[in-house]
Image (cartoon, rainbow, N blue to C red; front, side, top):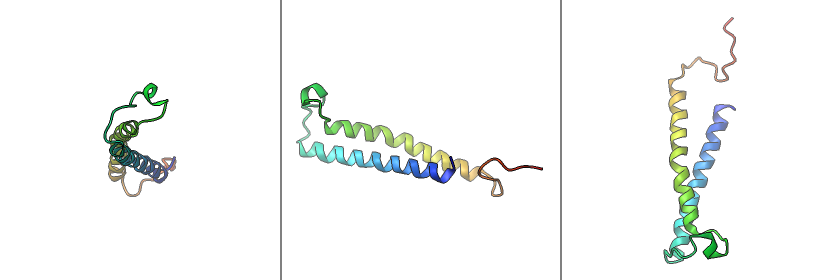
Length: 90
């Protein structure tokens, strides 16, 4: 998979994780920061806003790390190097 497409996918995951954190915080605040229903069996098997918050917080650091690693790897690559890695030396 080419580099720009991989970067776009990671940026979409980062945006989704940030949105999950924002939704989780806002919805939890709307409920009065109650923890009733955090366990799915207490809440008719519906998701609690804390679930979105946890998933978002869990996704942001590895996604950021991956984006920074991709950018660092791209910065170390010589300018004339073929990005596909299939260039013939001959």
